[in-house]
Image 1 (cartoon, rainbow, N blue to C red):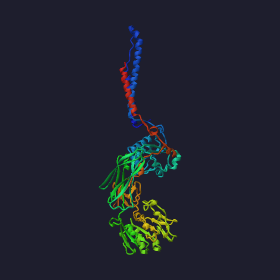
Image 2: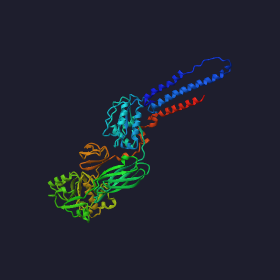
Image 3: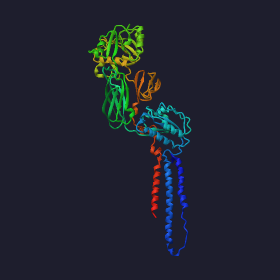
Image 4: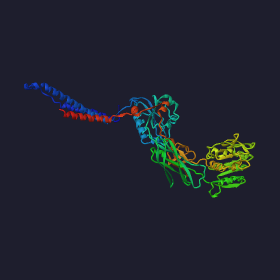
Length: 610
């Protein structure tokens, strides 16, 4: 038994006061013989015996009242079955402060239970108190501390927005200098996510103990994406917000998208353990905003900060013949075209800064052109599409070598078709195999050795299109003497998507907490703090950098509150502890207060009985 307020135990000594008073005022009887009452001696002897017993019982009850009152004030606690007083160990105390612990009062409960577990150990035990996730205010757990310091450190741990794991934590702590047998004691919600890649050392040693606070159901926004990122929007673009119901119950609520003064709200129902996309049409001028869920339990993943870069109208420069390229890129109503086209026979003398895409349609380049094109590719949101002709001269071969190495012209007997297409690539993901694209005929092509990503191949495994970052190499020219693709209905969407996907490789300006800042030298967090290049994002919200807005969100997996199951825990050799039975000390304050009241009631009862 332990006492939270042991000083009140001194008050138990006051229970001697009723004994002193009893002895001081004790009645002393003087025996006087009286002959006529001698026949009452036996009767009176019995009565005085009962009175003495009654006085003793009342005395004991008064002492018990005082003792129980002070015992109640001292807040006594009885240790759990597993953790007895005097348990001696070197304890690595892991406090789960990940984003999911913001559910209800789970984090406060974890801290309280950890402090109660500490007092169950012997005073000579040592502790290493470790938060599961680092915070900007976190300290390095580099040393063992005594129980009193451990309780203070548990109380100082703050909640984070990160997603931690035992495996990652284990790599950053050392227990080689422990003085006693090492135990790992975890307090948290026990998400499956935390125990991914659980360390083999802990699996073998049978010294990892876990006590969990179960959370309830949860629904989260897992992602917000542009519906068709390579389609050029003229007035509005569409985003899909994916809502995931992690629970076993149907979820019904509302979802609202806000982008500046634009607001759109929808009601929705998500079936258990299911994900549902919701469409929002947004004006092209609105590049960032928030999507919010209402009527949900875990608030941190009820808001998603999105920042998008919708494709704008591209300025295209065609070098060489444009007989089939220009009609494919310009629809009948020119004013609604997503492209503006300029065609010239040679690259020399052209100012490339005013264009977004350069198409080399079977044309050679000079050394000066190669230098200018290299500089052009080094700019963000610029691309070059190179369609190889019947010959490839050294300067052009040097320019495209990061993507493809040209070898020789291939003249097949008759024609070849497309043997393989990557339908997962943005260029082809709107097509299906049944569109007839694979039946396209090619009468000659240039054999190339790929160095980039091949997204389509001819019969025999020859690459058709190879992409490396913002450079695409096509092994044919687009004219009917080379291929009948120019007559196919798939030619126009394929060409559109090829230009856009190479020019806009990143449509999202969004990150997750714990991602490292790499593309900017410094950003400002929502609280105004500077974040330098190489540091990790630590709070969700809108961050600003170089006049642009970045959206930072928590890891969507933090919304999955599914705990580690008992079967998996046994497989990992993790001992799941029942807090109330094994660790949780029972508070006996109320019990002793009730004992004092019962003793008072009995005393009154005995005073009434004569």
